[in-house]
Length: 304
Image 1: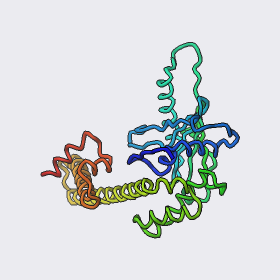
Image 2: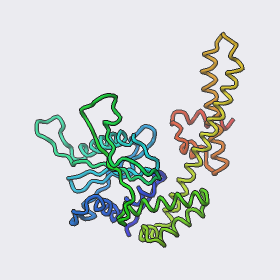
Image 3: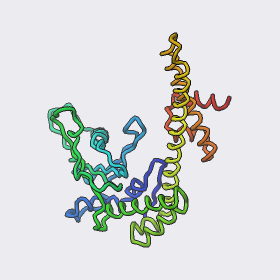
Image 4: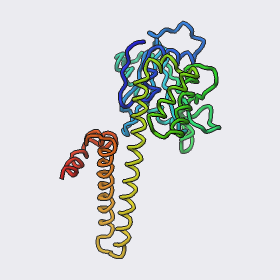
């Protein structure tokens, strides 16, 4: 198996599809008729930093010069995936145009791969649409549409089905054992015993376990952050209520108090991450996705 590296933003799905063998299997799960496709025909075009919120798309796959597949794995169903897919697709085409030096302002028609968009749904909702349309989000009618096909476990044993089953087992073990190393170990053990992603999990057990630990920590990060922001907001609201009778400067005071409360909540979140997970100041702020231009302010406050 070829050497793979993962990054902190990787999900198990993204990491799995970085391996050419599994990228090809993904394409064949969607196009079983194209048996001549090779690993070399499947080029990863996954993007980074597409949305300003720091969200990354999961998998972009270009097959020959004919097709671009964008595939997102989602455990929580969201109809808004169609809008996110539009943004991913536009960014993917932008990179394609730049890489191939296509002249969009010339008179000759440029040729681009056709797109196919998919969401792999690993959640528990029994009823989800088979296809999502961008037009479902419009206020009124529009002349442009885009469709995202929803994939679920089918029992066929293909790579999509195996990944969905992996996620279902992982969710069940987390429910049983919490966000613990035992939950991860039991997930890997049961998946291998049931023939799910066996070559991949056996060869990459350490990396998969590390990714799952990272995802567990990210969930803890957001819970801690949300708790402290909510607490700061409640305290801010109490202070505002006590001062409600003061007409002079009331609106200005509320705004300043809200900002101060939010800053206190962020500082508390940073401190808790440093203490609970042993993170550095920079690592804690990165985990909380604090904007770069605000980090010096919080770093100075923590050092006082």
